[in-house]
Amino acid sequence: DAGVTQSPTHLIKTRGQHVTLRCSPISGHKSVSWYQQVLGQGPQFIFQYYEKEERGRGNFPDRFSARQFPNYSSELNVNALLLGDSALYLCASSLVAGTDTQYFGPGTRLTVL
Amino acid sequence: GEDVEQSLFLSVREGDSSVINCTYTDSSSTYLYWYKQEPGAGLQLLTYIFSNMDMKQDQRLTVLLNKKDKHLSLRIADTQTGDSAIYFCASSGSARQLTFGSGTQLTVLP
Image 1 (cartoon, rainbow over the protein chains, first blue to last red):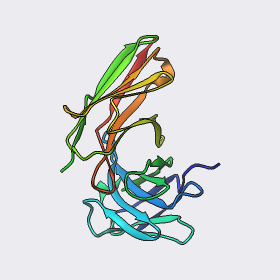
Image 2 (image 1 turned 45 degrees about the horizontal axis):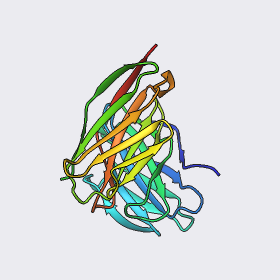
Image 3 (image 1 turned 180 degrees about the vertical axis):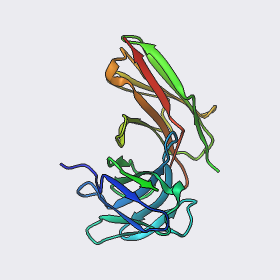
């Protein structure tokens, strides 16, 4: 079975632009979480979605938004990009929401110039 | 808020055992996880332990949990060069999220 997939692999944007990152969970998993990993740090929680509803939100500005589709895939959107948004964005899937074990994708490396 | 702390670096000789330590603050943590990250890659789930367990063994990996002291450790037996990576400890508590430490860079010397 395929694991968690994310696209694109790498992305370069300039300040003020908008970006959309995509994630497909493991088949049968209904929950998707997004994390931001800045270089040299551990991942920080951004959002969790389950059955298309937001179930958790981390301490990120409103420039960050996400949604989950009926097929359980998900998009993370970031508006008005800042240099500090440069990071590895990780998607994780789990069977259900809450404390269920999360499996991570390879990430999308975003560079903001 | 919740916090997870790890030492930043660990170097061991090939064939020795490695012990990576972690402390956490959330007493409601239900599961505690160890993930491995190789350069330029995502996170690979290594193992996890439920909060009512003291120890879990999985091949070369042994996880010890001291719930009273909120201390978690990962022991890797017979460490190999392929084990060189960053290891993250993570807790899942009352919030619907994982809280990660800053990671421990394990370097295995030949």
